[in-house]
Amino acid sequence: MASADPTTGPHDAAILAASAKHPIVPQVYKYGTAGFRMNADLLDGVTFRVGLLASLRSRRKSSAAIGIMITASHNPAIDNGVKIVDPFGEMLEQEWEQYATALVNAKSDEELVKIYNQLAADHKINLNAKAKVIYGRDTRPSGHKLVAALVDALEATNTPHVDYKILTTPQLHYLVRATNTEGKPITYGKVSEVGYYEKLATALVRTLQGKKIQGTLQVDCANGVGGPKLAEFLKHVPKDKVGLDVKIVNDDVLRPEVLNLDCGADFVKTKQRAPPNPQPEPGLRCCSLDGDADRLMYYWTDPEKGFVMLDGDRISSLAASFITELVDRAGLRKVLNIGVVQTAYANGGSTRFITGRLNLPVICTPTGVKHLHHVAQQFDIGIYFEANGHGTVLFSMDAVKAFKEYPPQSPAQKDAMDILAALADLINQTVGDAISDMLLVEVILAHKNWTLRDWATTYSDLPNRLVRVEVLDKDMFQTTDAERRLTHPEGAQDEIDNAVKKYGAARAFARASGTENACRVYAEAASRSEVQELADRVVRIIERYGNNSK
Ligand code: G16
Image 1 (tube, rainbow, N blue to C red):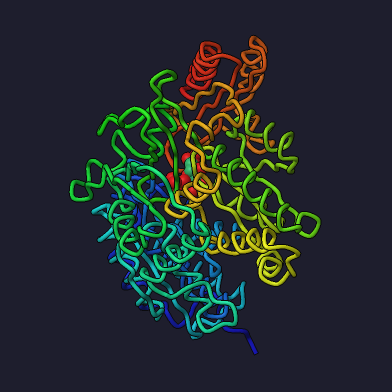
Image 2: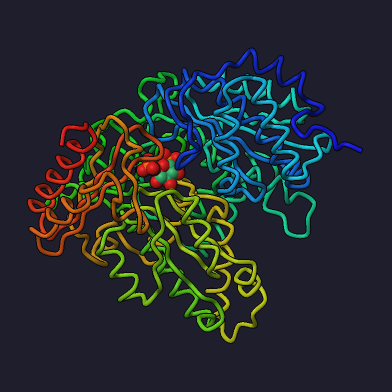
């Protein structure tokens, strides 16, 4: 008997009808660093097709809930993006990125249906099985329309869905894991936004063990979703117990055009200065979130030194040193392995501090938390942060079990184990989360009785520059060695090497962004003037190759 045609299936008619309402704008699309991200006008058809993939993914994953986040994070307000979250709250498995890319690039509705059915056949997916997709979006106005496209895909594929409306990206990741662990022996938290706040607030009290967070913290929310969500979280915090005095600034979500404009974590990192509005008072402890609240930068304006920034590398080394001290105090150092994951953007000063002073292994991966996350999972305690402030700390099941069950030999050991157990609840285990990371930093500073100045003195950063370079076709820039060297265009890396050789203790690289239509150049050198010169030279090389006029 001939087997059924693998390119037809039960959803064909419904997909064809719905897809006609969400045409794709012809161009080549690629699942990038964090999903599909571009001008929102191009995303209607893309989002529809991502919805189809999410329904397949849910059915492939035994009907587990799959998440979809509609956000363009740090990008300007006119952009938007769509990305898929896997059942444990982590980024979509990389093999499936190519299936998303294939569906989105289908040239016609008929081809789309064929690819959809072929994927189902290839992965032995029963298209009549149960499925579930949950989704949220940031404050961008274009999110509404994209949600409508997504819903049409979910309805066409008979996929039950839950709209969590406006969320931070990490909240959506939390909800995916909470949904899929509900009713299981080990749950992740209540399946609601309030459940997220309650989990963090309870863990905050436990980690502090009676200590209080001192002084005021000014939080710049990039005029994004982090503003209202942080305000909501603070309602759940027993201030009398923890002393968290937060002043929220740049929380205007009613004027979409001001999102990420001259404020937010990306502005602070790339411009290496505080947002101009409101001008932070000298000495005030400040931090910035990005547009979807998954990145965090700390800084203050020093009367003598001027602007001082504590970026993702600093958060990583602070967390690594605090956690290592606790693990030592708990007597668990021989039982648990601890490691740190960074990218090529990590400042050489931080890498030296972590390997030399903390004696921890450091692994370098390509940019994108999806890469860092998986490597961090190799450790019992895996600390991963990108220099841009995106990251988290992962605790293995064994580690959490040890914190709870290992017999303490002294009250000090018991205290250390209790703090570690609470940290595993305070720190978002699914993805980098600016609100959760901010609480982590505040807890560590409170325990150490440190100011930002104390934190900044733990090691010296090498002067560095990160520059965005406009090029005609960013995809011509291809890399190897965790993005530290260009393989294409031919000759460009030799020129970068020659430029670097002119400076002592210097380093530079260029790579194509996976979230913006541009290249990024990073340079590090012994002095500010040298790094500026080196960055300028490398920028000129990239501009020349990128604009085809070498
Ligand atoms: C996303 C990713 C990050 C990455 C950043 C920049 O952040 O989640 O891991 O570092 O993009 O990537 P690229 O240099 O490739 O543009 P976000 O905060 O924008 O979602």
